[in-house]
Image 1 (cartoon, helix red, strand yellow):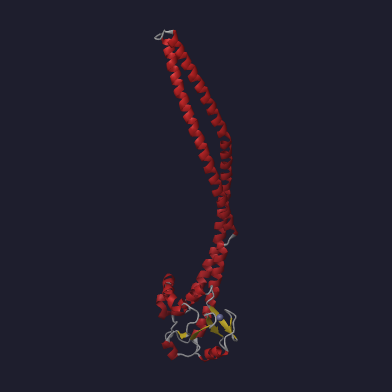
Image 2 (cartoon, rainbow, N blue to C red; image 1 turned 45 degrees about the vertical axis):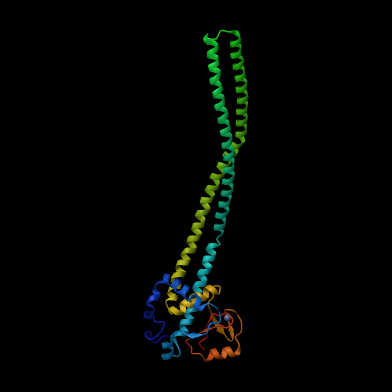
Length: 298
Ligand SMILES: [Zn+2]
């Protein structure tokens, strides 16, 4: 369609700055305020171009924009599918299960640690009593105490210490009995957790594999998208990006008869007449939805 590119707005050599895809987002952000809103006035991309050329290349560039949009819509679908993968939900479910189990394990460990501390205190106390009994025994049999009353007092003290020790030992047994079911529960949870970890590893691998399949499609589609974008003038592309973000991913629509294929509304007769009189390279917007309209070449 294009006879020569050198005098045209969209000629690749006029758009050297457009080569960097990452910088385009900044351009779009700058344009955001200027082009926001649906009912912007229609415009001709390049006044110079308008002067020198009244029909032709831009029509195909607008058609190229439709092709670009097909790629972008497909990319959106691929990303949507990637985000909504059943494998992703499976991983998330297993992660929630694991977190719930970890919370139960932590709570049980807290209780188990409390029992261990209590048991240690009791055992320390018993050890202290045993030392006292040993000391009293030594006094009793050393021969240094001979008064019967004093000997009796030592024997009474040893008996009292013994009673205290037996009481503490009963308490130690109670603590050990309380620990038993907790230890069993912790052992059960540990094996459940190991099983869960294995399932999570498996599910994560399945998710990565499913993602890789989509990522390969994304790479192919992205390359095709970039090729399509290279045939669209930078200013038109920037406007397209802004419109796509504000209009749910569809920035360009065909004008078929009197209706916009983007919003499916009929344009007013007066508006249609006005559009018909515009040069072919004028960028026209639907007055209802604000999308760029691609007029049929007839
Ligand atoms: Zn519309």
